[in-house]
Image (cartoon, rainbow, N blue to C red; front, top):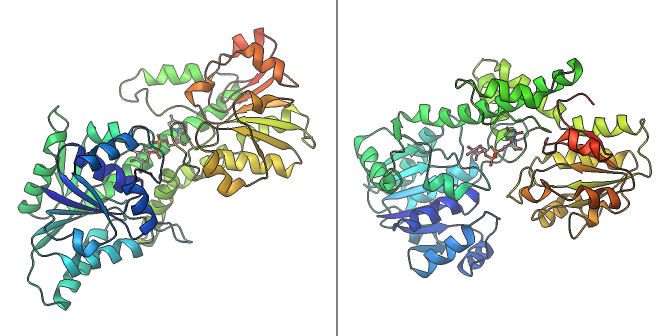
Length: 439
Ligand code: UGA
C-alpha cells in the first residue's frame, strides 16, 4: 500500500511514521520547506518520546519520505490523510481553510481511486465539504477519477502517541462505501492483531465521536476539580474520594485526578468548538459550558492559595516553579495552566524562577525574559519563598526534601498535582498546600 499524509504536525508525523513502521510506503507532505528539510535530516518540529528514532529508522529503510509537493506525492496513493491544523477562529469554531485547501489540492492531482481521510479534528459535516472540494477540482480538470471520503479521528495522547497509535484502544472510521471500508480495514490490519477493534460507522458519527470523547474526558476532569474544591471547604480529602469512587467499575480510576485545570491543544479547543457547533444549530451544551467555566477558574486555584498563604502580599517574593508544559513528557505550552499562574504572580510584583525538563524553549516564545529559567530543578529553588509544582514530571515526584528545604528561603510547597504525601512533608517542617484537601 502507498499512502500520503498531508501536514507534518503532531498528528500527521506520528500517523505517517507509525504506518511506515509496519511496512507501508508513506510520504509526509508539508508546504513548509524548512520543516521538510529538517525532517529529512532527522530534526523534528515536536518533542515526542521515541519518535525521533522511529523517523530515522523508517527514512533509512526507504519507507518514509518527506516532500513539499502534494502533486507528486499523491500520485498512486491508495489513501490520503488530511492532518493539517484547524486553528480556532475568534468565535471558537474550527477554521477549515487549510483542510479544504488540501482537499482541493488532492482533487487537482489524484490519478486513480483514493480514499481521502480527514484525520485532523474537524466539525461534523466537514467530510461532506471535503468531498465537495475534491469533486469540484476533478470537474474543473475534467478528470474521471473515483474517490471516497472517510473520517478517521485520532485519539493520541501527547507524550504517549506512539504507543497509542501502535496499540490503540479502538480505531474509529466513518465511511460511506464498502470499497472505502475495505481499503481502511487493510490499512489498519497490522494494528488489529491483538484484538483491538476497528469500528466502522457513518461519517457524521465518526466526526462526532472525536468531540464526544474529548468532551467526556474534559468533563471528568472539571467534575473532579469541582469535587476537590468542595472537599476543601467541607474538610474531606479528594485523594481518598477519588479512590473511593474510582473503584466503581462504572466510574473507573482513570482521568479523575484533580489538578490545576486541563490544558493543551485539544481539550480547550474541542470543548469550545462543540459548544459553538451546538449553538449554531440551536442547542445549548449546558454541561460543557460549565466544564469550561470550572476549568478557567481552576487554573487560578493554585495562585489563590499562594496569595492566601502570604496574606495577600506577593510583592518582591520569589517563586520556584517546577514544570511549564501543560502535562509531562511534552514540550507543548498551548493553554498550559503555568502561563496563567505565572502571569498572576508577576502581576502581583513577584518574580519567578522556573525549571522544565523539555519545555523551556517553547515557554520562551510566550514568556520571554519575564521569568528566569533555572538549569535544573534545584537551582530554581535557591532563595525562593515557595515551590509551586505545576506539571507532574516524573523527576519531581521524589526529590530530597532535605535539599528542597535547605535551598528554599521558606519551607512552603504548593502542589498543583497532588504528587506528595502531606503527612510526610509536614513532619519535616513544610507548609504543604495541595488540591482538594483542607490545610
Ligand atoms: C487528549 C486526549 O486524551 C487524546 O485521546 C486526544 O487524542 C487528544 O487530546 C487530541 O484530541 O488530540 P492530550 O491533550 O495529549 O490528549 O492530553 P491528556 O493526557 O488527555 O491531558 C489533557 C489535560 O488534562 C492535561 O492538562 C492534564 O494535566 C489534564 N488531566 C488529565 C487532569 O487534570 N486530570 C486527569 O485525571 C487527567
